[in-house]
Length: 224
Ligand SMILES: [Zn+2]
Image 1: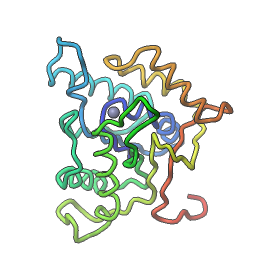
Image 2 (image 1 turned 90 degrees about the vertical axis):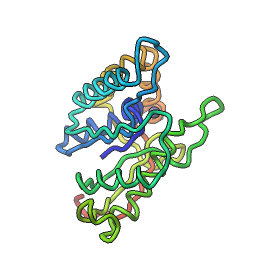
Image 3 (image 1 turned 180 degrees about the horizontal axis):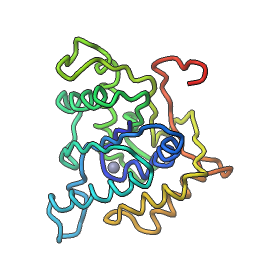
């Protein structure tokens, strides 16, 4: 399961890994907190029509990566807060889909370099996802009406300054680029080229890669 704030956060982040995992037979579900209903400067759109377009773009991008399901939570873009209400929604998603691994964003990142303040929705989604995963989703007395408790085994954090795990995406970098291109309302050819260069940087020039910090909440067993 991938939990992010906006349509396109996955294609800028972990889409190459997701595509690699679906090719290997994994079931992958995206949970997108907002449908990006504030994400345009173009006056032809309303909040409703830009959200519809961005869901279409995200759905097309996910299909290219072989993703099995997308859950759109339709929070307001730019207004996501780490509330109990959002935590409850993430717990419901985790208990419904029972993921072994959740990929999400980094709750500790406020700045990136000297030119980017991390989007507040990214921070809110990241901290709420962590709180939903551990311990709440795994505790049977918490939100029993949302279904049986489920323990996520591993949390993988994308867009982190402290990676410890690198996934070789040489076999899926092209599909990642095409998936990113599906977000026509958001990206240009230059953006796609930039994301390709990020992959080469992450792979230290050896191979295109995606970098993560991985939290092992349950010990890995041989063969898993
Ligand atoms: Zn975003």
